Length: 125
Image 1 (cartoon, rainbow, N blue to C red):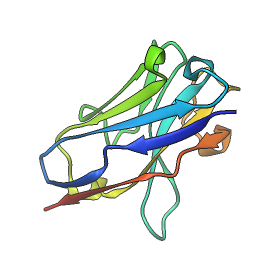
Image 2 (image 1 turned 90 degrees about the vertical axis):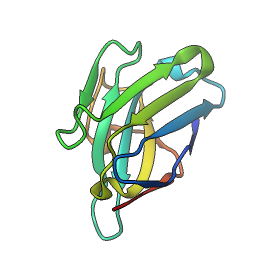
Image 3 (image 1 turned 90 degrees about the horizontal axis):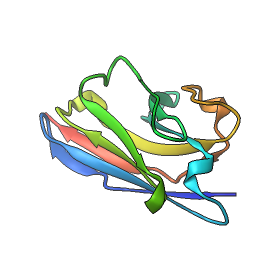
């Protein structure tokens, strides 16, 4: 089992940048998991943002963030990162990282087994 803790959220002006981190702990290694980032605003379903395969060789992005967000992972540090540039007010949400073992890579929330508690990202206009 793995525990996930997100950090790095905050308030930023439109056009700014933030880097989120997702640290994994427990009796496992993050390299055992494909990882994803999702986001959610109140009253809406959780939305896929980006995912990365176990070795980092494959990534998939939601169209809404392509060219602006970059996912990466450092398996030696048991950490996954989400670099967010050119932020827009519509990026405002709680961001969650998630881990799964069954698929090489997936953008479907129901495929993920473990979730962090989330970190708030607020982009002001």
